Amino acid sequence: MVKKYPIVPDKVRRPPKHFSWVDHRLVRENIIDKCSNQASTLYLFLVTVADARGLSYYSDISICSRLSFEIETLLSARNELIRTGLVAYKRPLYQVLSLDPPEPSTSKRDNTNQQPEFLGQILKQMAKEAR
Figure (cartoon, rainbow, N blue to C red):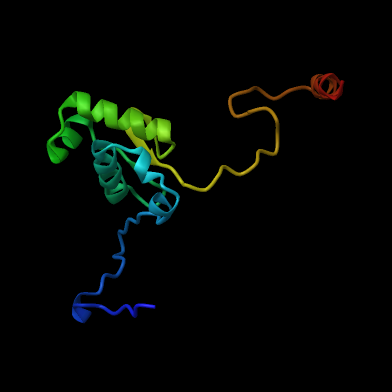
């Protein structure tokens, strides 16, 4: 086994207060292999500028300028990252997504945008689903 040691001990990288990180599973699980160079570049940029929750709001113009992308390249790379499940996008916000599988939902239905239901409606729905 090869022993690892810092080549430049006084320049050992330490996460700064405002840190970003790249999950090793991108390589170990061959996720990065599914991405083009442009998508990988965009992903690295987004991981670098994201906050602790993976959120950033760089504009298309800023990203294109910083990465020397044409707008078509950015759109293609972004769509690739969305399809691969690495990034979510809702203008103007990007979210770098966790590589962990989503936690199981406690409910079969998404109630985030629904009005409260009456007990009778809930019981009818439960009876209907039990059939």
